[in-house]
Every structure is written in structure tokens, then in C-alpha cells.
Length: 471
Image 1 (cartoon, rainbow, N blue to C red):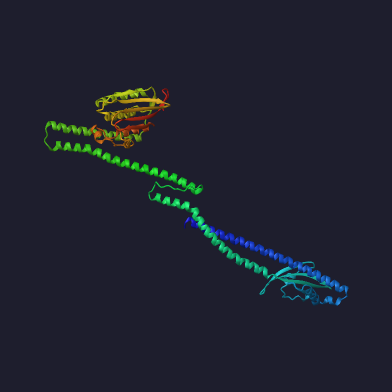
Image 2 (cartoon, rainbow, N blue to C red):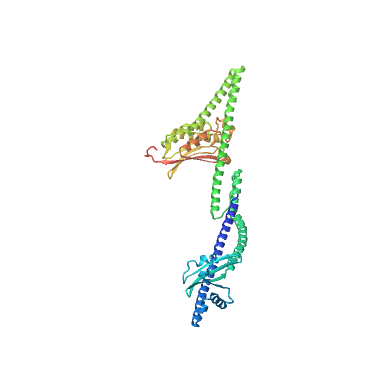
């Protein structure tokens, strides 16, 4: 059952109960008021009858008409003559003449002089209100009983109940229609959220809720959109990670296949054919170079895996010493490709592993030299520090990197120019390793490049004081 249907049914039940209870209580209240008015009127009439009879008896005594005092019927007729035209019926019954099966027994039983009592009698003709009091006449107790028809009170209550049932049914129907459209209006936001959620469950992670109300549904919509943003971002990250793994497997397979093909091919030639000494030397050189390439690639892969599983022993490093050591190792690599390495340092300290950081910058300078080969431009390796941050840059004026390739250049086995990289002995693992080392040092690697203009690789570290103890 849908939520709006539950709301509708609950409201109909509540309205029906509220109408029924309130109507019943109101009708019962009116009924009690009518009955109380009838009771008071009957008691007042009984009191008036008593006074009338007492006055009539007094007049008879004054006229010395003592014989008529014992004639109860004569007294009753005298009272009836005075009450002619009214709806009140009067009975004067001597106590000793009251029949044992009289309906008045429960009302007059135990009645004392000066007291009055009443009761309601139900018959086929309707309802009668009976009121009784007692009067002493010549040592005889006489019951003064007056009756009044109150059937109209009960008929009025029944009529009110009938009309109220009709009114209640109409009111509930009208309220049901109103509640139905009101529930549609109030739950439209929930319906919208349900539709959006269903589409997201079907894989549309870019969809968002457009509910902008300021109630709880609007708040739910706001947090749903935040959740959707997180889910979409997480899915995108998973997809990107999956793409990287697939690319890694594909590139790794390709990089392994190429040298193995050469090794197998040349070794098969040595095994199955007669060759000159010179050709045998060439084949052996190919096998040796491809074997060394496989060895270098496996070592770098091992380093990548090892870096994820080991802690780095960080120590304070004086930056000029680190840059001088990098220059001594990298300058010959640059000179071999016809470029000059220019080093500009600054006196500051950083925290890290000297050998790992040296590997990072040698790899960057080697990549810059490859990109600048045959151009005769200098490679600049410089350092600056400001506000507690140390910036080291390797800048070249080489072929540059396309913008769409910059974000992927640090992925394992990824190479912008695969033919150039393989020709120079690369496998696309150097920058991946460098990026991982910088990350483990708490640093940040940023690459700024433009095709045919050059590339600048920037590494940011936190500066430490020269007299600080080892962290």
C-alpha cells in the first residue's frame, strides 16, 4: 500500500471517529438538557398541584364541607377543571388503594411528606414522565401523581441521530475527496524522490532531485543529492581505478611481450641456424639488452609494490647537498643527449629519504633530457622556499605533453610517445615511481606543460628548520 493511501485511510478513520464521537456527545448533551427541563417542569407542576389541592381543601373546611374531603375523586375533578387545556394528567390515589402491581410502586415506595420523586415509563404509545408527592388528608395519605408525555424528547433525539448519520456520511465523503487530493499534493515530493531513486538504481548516477521545499521532504532531497554526488564520485573513482588496472595489465603485457619476443627470436636463431661470428654477436647483444630491460622493469615494479608496504625513514636533508648529488648523477645523462643541466639551489632543509628523492629528480631530469634531445636547450633544476614551503622544479624547453595526457603521465606503463620511450629504453614506470615517492613524503607533484613549448615538473615539500630534531 502506498504512503498516500495510508495517509488517506488514516485521515478518513480519524475524521469519521471525530465526527461520530463529537456528534454523539452533542446529541446526548441536548437530550440531557431536554430531559432535565421536563423533569423540572414536572416537579414544578406537582408542587403547583399540591398547593392547589391544599388551597381547595382549605376552602372546603371554611365552608364546613367536611364530607367532600373524603371524596378523592371529587378533589381530582376539581383539580382537572382548573388544569383544563393543559397536557398534564393528574391522579390522586390513596395509599391503601394503590395496587400491588401498580407501575408507580417503585416511585412512591418510601416516599415521605414533603418529598417528591419521578420516573420515566415506556409504553407502546411513547414515553411518559411521572412525578409523585404525598399529601395527608384526614389521617389518610394520598399520592399526588401527575404525568407528562415526553415522547417528543426521544423522537427529537432519534431524529437528530438520523440526520447526523446522513451529515456525517456526507462530511466523511467530502473530507475523503479533499484528503485524497491533499495527500496527492503532500506526497508529490516523495513520488519525485522515488522516481529519481529508481533511475539511480538503474544506473543513472547523474540524476538529481529537484524538490526545493523547506520542509522535511526538502531536507531529505538535499541530503539525497549530497549522497548522489558522493555515489557518483565514488563510482567515477572506481571506474577510473578499473580503467587504470585494465590499462596497467594491457601495457604490462605489451611491455613484457616485446622484449620476450626479441629474446625468443634471437635465441632461436642462435640455436637453429649457423651464423657468422658478427651476427652471433649482434643477436647476443639484442638478447642482453632486452634482458636488462626486463630486469630494470621488474625492479621498478618491485619498488612500486615495496613502497606501498614499507615505512620511509625520514631524516633532515640539506637541500644544496641533495641537489649537488643529483647534478653529479644526472649531468652526464643530459650531456649524452646534447643538453646542459643548470642547477639553482637555496639554503633550506626538508624531511625525507635522500636516496629515494635523488631517484625522483634524476628520473625527472632524464625525462626532460629525452624531451629536449636535438634541441640544444638547457634543463633548469632549481629550488625556492617561501612561507614554510619548498618548491623544486625541473624545467625544459622540449616537445611538451598534450593537455589530455598530463593527468595520466604518472600512471604505470603510460607513455606519451611509446616509440620514443622504448627507443630510449623506457617502460613508463619512472614517473609512476616518482609520484609514489613524493606522495609518501607528504609532498605534492604538479606538471605544467605545453606542446612544443616545454614542461615544468614542480614538487612541493614542507620546510623544516636546520636545527630541528629528526621527525
